Length: 326
Image 1: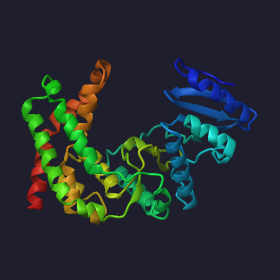
Image 2 (image 1 turned 180 degrees about the horizontal axis):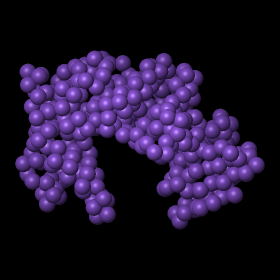
Image 3 (image 1 turned 135 degrees about the vertical axis):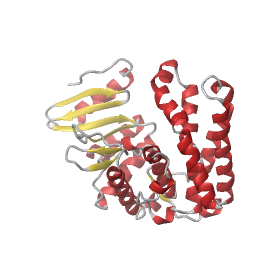
């Protein structure tokens, strides 16, 4: 039985019906969770059906999760065995449809980076992930293009500056100039240290180390999920993302950050300089300017807090790092 197919999903309905005919199970139901994601029930088992952006991305995630489980990392989902069947896997890859385990979330606790204990738990899982992927990163050399964080940040900065005239009604010029100045200073310094980055070994990084990609299960185990932004890059990129995401929770305190049990190798000059780049500000404002009025209303409170309420803490943080690097 196929249930709850929303408007706009007609292009996928034929394939979903096809799956209902080919997946082994006495009772099969499919219902929509949100756009491009469905809940699939096969007898008493639950699976997620997700529309990926490409068959190649799907193939990479199937291989990555299988390798993680082979090396005893079980804190993530597995894809359905149907992905190992040549005829059906080819059909799924053509449509970019992946079927993987549904992890029952904890009923009361949604995972966030709000406490040091939770951040430590996430960091331990991230370190475990990196320790594991180094064993098979070579298998992804031909699958993933090397990722340049500096090139991405440079592009993000140019876009931010391009939107300056559209931001004037929202952001006073003093704030805008500070964020641009910090970004330009950081990038200039980082490009001078680019050789350091190129000498670091490549890993299959997660690429999106945000708290909602750490799922606390009903069994109280923490899972690392959603590898859509997996890249071939030094693992320091994942730790920079982690640090950027937790800084608002510790009031942009460098002292507190250095107590977060980050690997010692990331107290490098490169790492500290990169923390000055206001990647969150540029990312969120670029999205805001391009977003609909509904989106703007939805995120304005968060963006105001990030940009203005936290500004004095961030400025003090930047000043501390610059003094430390001199």
